[in-house]
Length: 354
Image 1 (cartoon, rainbow, N blue to C red):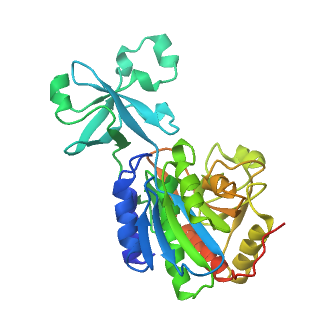
Image 2: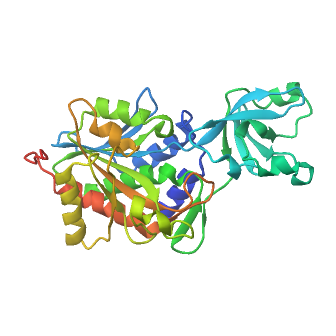
Image 3: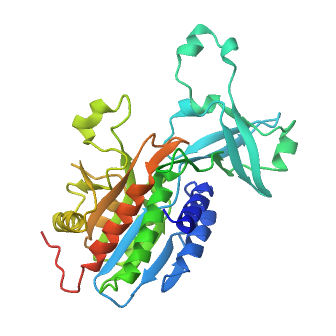
């Protein structure tokens, strides 16, 4: 990956962006989009847009959600300890002992998630699953009054991890689900510009996917596209303990290319076009079964207005919804190329009616 693109990706992933608090990440994304897009803007919901060839046909929406799972300060006790509720789907077992960043009123506040030490846990307590309400955040305050000078109820929280390379090919970060998708759709738009498309293409960094596909629903209604391609992450089955899931979710591994979903959430003709382009352009790809609604932005886009011809392109992702998600940089490059070349083949006469 070129150094300039990698620097943008690292900054984008490093920027805290839990659902409902995506503004800082949107600023990073829009700053990059402004270097090549015909027009950029944000809507009242917080979705960020970059447009190319707006008068073209058909109208194509490329969507990746830029929100991540997080926490929210819900209570501050008299000793200055913070209690939180989850933003999106957490496995609370991950949280004890983690450092966190709280977006406080005057800037970022460092904290640690506390729990009673294992030495003091009774036998029955050790056997119980950790619950979020049994954990707290320590910011070093000695009283509620001192804590409230730095944080407030409703402040968002993320785990304190920055992106790093595991090796030259693999990247580890929090928030890969799914700022990586928002990165891919913007890169696809950049590549598409050089291909001189007939279609009007709109890259969208959507908001609030982790709490109900909300940003995709509102942005798709506003854009009124005829074609939609959502980019998200999907589970890999290439790590210990996941091999047995292949019968249920299919087979996916890092570095083998983007994963194309196939099922009722995906327009069959658009799926076939993606496969055709991948094979002609020699882009590696994988296929996953999607026998019902996918739970991604693709679902919201497909059901907008009278319906949109929709596809889902996913990036294989290890350790999803943890602070140490792992992806292949090559899969990002291949996904962006596949989407760009697919869009370049669309014309006003295209008909995706099954």
